[in-house]
Structures are given as C-alpha cells and as structure tokens.
Length: 234
Image (cartoon, rainbow, N blue to C red; front, side, top):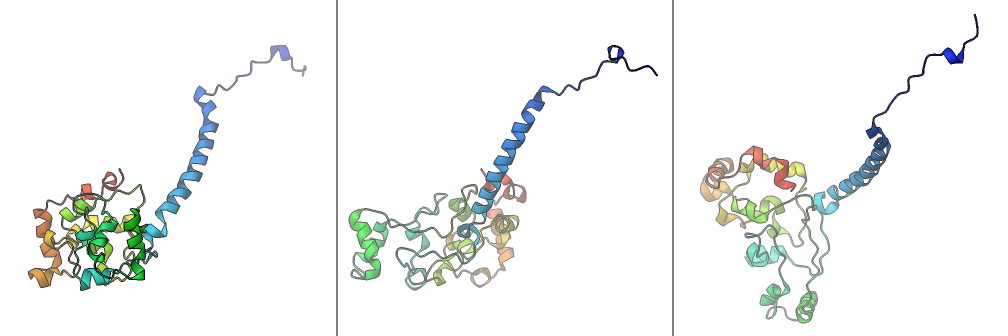
C-alpha cells in the first residue's frame, strides 16, 4: 500500500466546548470551599450544647434560685421577664428589678454583691443564656403565649430548679412534634405561667379534649403553616 499522504488526509474535527465551560472549574472550586466552610459551621451551631444539650447548666454570676422565688415566694415569671407576652424576646430583668426587693431584703448577703455593684455602677449583670436558639431559627415568645402555650412546655418545671438548666432538646424535630400536635400543649391563657397547672384537675377535661377546644378558640394555624420552613427560618 502506498504510504499515507498527509496532504490528502481528511480534516480533523475539533470539539467545541460551550463558553460556560470556562467557568465550570472555578464554580466547582468555590462550591467545594463554600460547602467545606458552611456545613461544619452549621453543624457546630446546630449541635452546640447551648441549643441541643439537655441538662445544659451554665454557672451564673449570681446564684438566682428559681425554686425559692417562683414556688416558695410565688413571683410570677412576667415580673422578671417583663416582655415575654408582648415581644419575641423574653427580656432578662434589669438590676433595678432585683433591687426592688433586695434594697431591703438580704442587703448584706455576699451572694448578692454582684447585684449591688451592678446597681451602684450602672452596669448590667452578665447573665448567661440557658435557652439560646441559633440565629437561623426564629422563635416568638409572645406568639406562643397568645396561643396558650405555657412556659413549662419549653422550659420545664422552672419552679423546682434551684439552678436553671435546659430540660428540653430545643431541636428542630422537637419543635415540629409540637407544631404537628399543638393540642397536646395548649392551656387557658391565664394559666400560662402556672407551672403546676393540670388540665384534668383544673377543668375536669383531659388535656387533648380541652386543647382541641382551645385550638379553635385561639385560632391556632393548621399543620401546613405550622410545619412550613418559613415559619421558623426567616
């Protein structure tokens, strides 16, 4: 056979890549960097002991005894957490609230020295949040109380806690369980801060029966809205 003649060879067909292919590699690199940064950060925030660890009990600058103040003395939650019915955030009490009583009670107690110093210097007491949701989760205290959800449903038996700790996981799954069946937790609005309230002993109705009535009376939203992502992630 005669040798191949390069001059008579058929033309080579070159593959033409689309213009967007020029950006494919940089996009993949950026996506890898983004996922490598975002996912660990999300995991750290979402699994932080302050948001999901049942039993989280930080040491406070002042050993405030809820069992003494709430159960023994009968102080209502709203006296200290004064914004809880009107705002999304349940405000921590200013030092003035503490001094309303302690300007005359236990005035020489060494345990209350940080309170007296805070009041004299006009600086806030550096309380540590116990129930601290991550920033990507939205929770409105006023909305829940207006629908008849009692403090104990999320915070547990605060009136039995000498030192407050996190009694519930506060995870997304835990919240969704309540949103799917809110009738298991509703109570009359005038009983939201009553830690020992019991539906059957107080009203003669079982919890579910009473809550179904309250669900209609308080116009609690249906499951579609209650479990929508945008309800809690805004």
